[in-house]
Picture 1: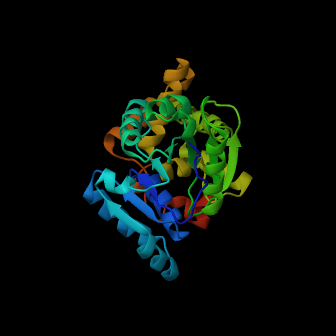
Picture 2: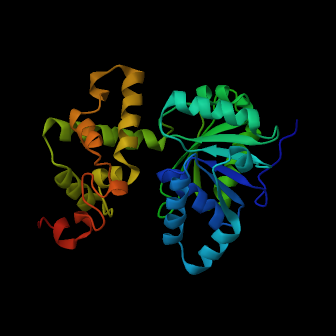
Length: 295
C-alpha cells in the first residue's frame, strides 16, 4: 500500500487531553489543520476548551472554532484521520494497550505516533499492529518553544519519518531527528542528565530548588530554571519518566529521590495544581528582585 504524504486538509486525531495533548491539539488547529481532540473524560475536554481559548488571540480563536472538535467517542475521533497521535501518561503498558486499540480502528492508510519522552519507539510500534508507519515525537511547549524531536523504531519506514517531518513543519515546529533508536532521543537525553543531577542534589539536601534555578537563570539567561521547567511539565510526569530510566538501568543513581514521591503523593504537581517547587500563578522566579537574591 502506498501511504499518502502529509495533507493539511485531512484530519488529525489527538488522543489524550492532558497537559501536552491539549497543547498539541491547539497547535494543530491554530494552523488550520482539522483536529479531533479525544479523551475518555468529558470533564477534561471541557477544561481543555477553556485552556486553548486562554492561549489564543482573537484571530486564533476563530481558527480554533473552525478546526478543533472534541469527542469522547474514539471511532468518531479516528474517522478518516491521517494520523492518530497519542498523549497518555508515560506508562509502557498503558500506551501499548491504547495503540493496540487504535490500530484496530484506524484506517489502513493512516499513521500512528506517540508523544513520549523516555520510551523507545519499537515496543509501541509493535503493539500498534503497523510498526512501519509508527513514530515517536517529543514536544517542547509549542506555545513558547519551537523544538520537537522525532524518532522511529527498527521497522519504521522512511515515508513515515518524512510524514512526521512534514507535520512538524506544518505546525511551525523545528524538528530534530534522532537517527538511531535510543531511550530519550538526542537533545532530551541532555535535559534528562541535567534533571537527574538537580533532583539528586535536592534529594540529598545539597541544593535548594530556588538556589539552583537562580544560578541557572543568571548563567544562561533563561526565564526559569530546571525546577521551574519541571513544574511546567508536571511532577507526576517527571516522576514516571525518572522511574522508567531507573527500571531500564537498575542503577541506584537513577532512582527518583523520596522527596519527589512525597510531593506527588501530596498532590503538589506543579503549574496544573497551583503548587510544586513554586506556587502558581505568579511564581517567585518571575519577580526581578527574586533573581537578584531577594525574598
